[in-house]
Amino acid sequence: MLKLNTKEIQLKLTEIEPQWIFNDNSIQRSFKFNDFIEAFSFMTSVALIAEKLNHHPNWENTYNKVSISLSTHDAAGLTDLDFKFAKAIDKLMKK
Ligand code: H2B
Image 1 (cartoon, rainbow, N blue to C red):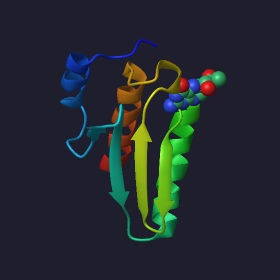
Image 2 (cartoon, rainbow, N blue to C red):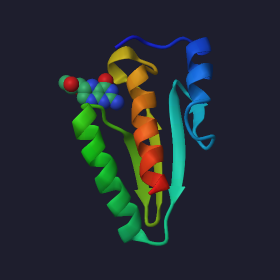
Image 3 (tube, helix red, strand yellow):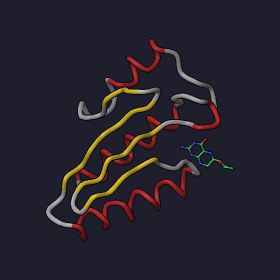
Image 4 (tube, rainbow, N blue to C red):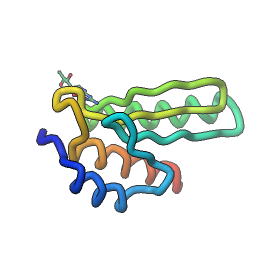
């Protein structure tokens, strides 16, 4: 996977939900649910996408909150795969 440059990243950021922020060589978004079960159900769906893409999130869960940070470890930065993953997560949230 090819590491994206700043210009490519700026363009790609316009294709995902505005809640994603570019920070520390990754894209990050936080989610809040009604309770732990809803948060964990969401995480389960994200985990299935991750396995399908063979691309995995760095994330944190505290009760009803989930924070996700996406980057490509192998490329030490962002690649198309991170944006593909972000789009799939955005799609989940629209259901
Ligand atoms: N996920 C992420 N986010 N970045 C990677 O570089 C990565 C991954 N590499 N999932 C994959 C798995 C790699 O470790 C395996 C061996 O394919």
